Length: 330
Image (cartoon, rainbow, N blue to C red; front, top):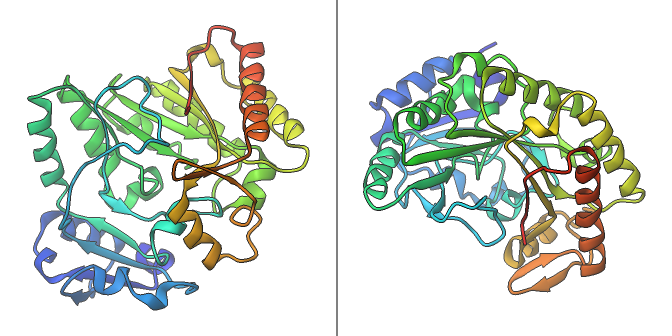
């Protein structure tokens, strides 16, 4: 079975994108010889009937808007003054119940912008002004799509050859085979989101278990890449201390936290509009319907819950690695 038939119900390509080298390469990788030609990606991606539809299509298109956006207030910049994110791929093959993409996009379709070269041109101009830090997996999980796009390799190549550029590739993917094949640079950071297996089982549908993610961490470190561990978002559940303590024990039995670049800590938070959209789409969702507190346009746990969880995680980290470099989203 071809890759696209295993992952997608249909493949659409914008007419103006058909002759792009990237488009042809992705279609070949997907094993798709007969895509459906459309005028604009939004004709499919923004369909009103996408909500509640279990189908997922792949769309190849040109980015008609901005290739880089300044980082959002609820995202961590890790000390980088000039922080951007790239919308090069929209939507994710994973189905995490808490993901802001559920409030941002109407359905499950994945749109890949094949004009990544234009993104790099924008970066060329920005780098003339100041160093640039880009989160390339903000709207997707590029590692999970690497067999299809090859974009992880492209971002790593750019980090290797551009001294004023660094990239973060955030992932939950358990793939271990890619790291030894990628160009290694201390400016290409792989950031692994880790959760207790109880959280993964209940709220991170389709993602690898904790063991699989830890194996991927090991391989990325073995290849020489800087690794960021992300306990973010932390999710409040019954017995959350027990679950997060168990996760930490599992992790530190395999990974020396002194060897990771840094650690990100943050409880669940989301923009008010995205949460409103999620509540309409998921009336029975434990996460979407939680009674969060609104603060300056963002919903988050009540302060007593938020501080208890984040402080507890800091204690767990300190017990295992007192000198760990940690970042709190606040």
